[in-house]
Amino acid sequence: MKLMGVDYGRRRIGLSVGDEAGVALRGLPTIDRKNNPGFFSKLLEIIDREKPDALVFGLPLDGDDAETVMSTEVRTFAAKTARRAGLPVFFIDESLSSLRAAALLRYQGKKKRRDKGSVDRLAACIILDRFIREHGCA
Image (cartoon, rainbow, N blue to C red; front, side, top):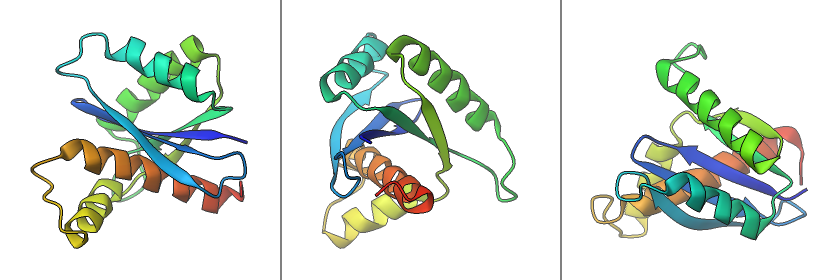
């Protein structure tokens, strides 16, 4: 099953996709919502091009694994995306995925400040990897 990972944010949407076997993951272009008024059409265009079988959204839960204002926003956006793309949606706790992504980029010698899109793209890969490992999709 080919899956697409989504790291939803109010400013940017990080995307990743896995291969059919769930072994190889790659980041896709990050969508900057603030500078792209047609961001939702761009998202649907990428989904159409990549042809995933399902979408995996990172869900920002609090320290007690309870819903937050942001997780409600993610669920609403995911439902709209699922409806428009005609795909099933899954959720996975995204706790610390962006912090982990930033740490990995710093380890590679890249500055978070210079390319926040890279952090979101890598966070989407981390979200997708976590889902595949936890659900035995590989």
